[in-house]
Length: 191
Image (cartoon, rainbow, N blue to C red; front, side):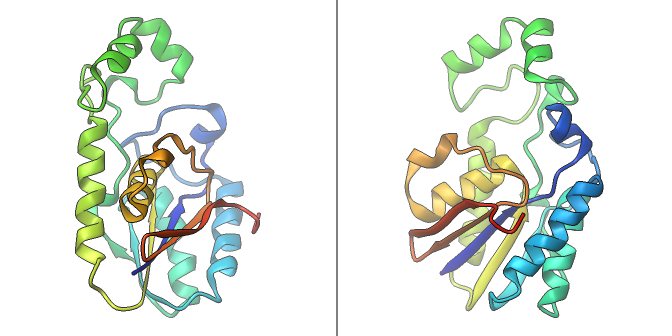
């Protein structure tokens, strides 16, 4: 199985350091340029399919990638970004100020933490594992355009290596995992 994971292009909230979660923030002008650049970068890949989160920022990144291959993105609800609950729209500094007990509690509880009234890391990982299971036996290369959290979990699950759990995927980065081996990771050489 060859899997290409692409994080969506940049948004104004990415620039501001805001947690977007399920808030449907569109790409900004730079993000649109990044989407075109990553489509050019992937034009030489023979993609059998392009799967995308339904969120505007991911779909706007997936569309030029798919169009360059003569494909249409397949929208999958399970590829949306983690629901950040009370933290959505805030920076990490604002989270620490408004909810001073949340981050220490999250660190203590671990992947099952849901004290922010959002989605747990474990739930995001389970969604990513479900996507991987759905595409595992499909022929050809699958490109998945998603967000930082589900993208990271897809890479970890496909490579079988939890060491990449802390990876911070850059906007429109390309990561490729083939038969459990990482071919490239968080590559933004096309920008």
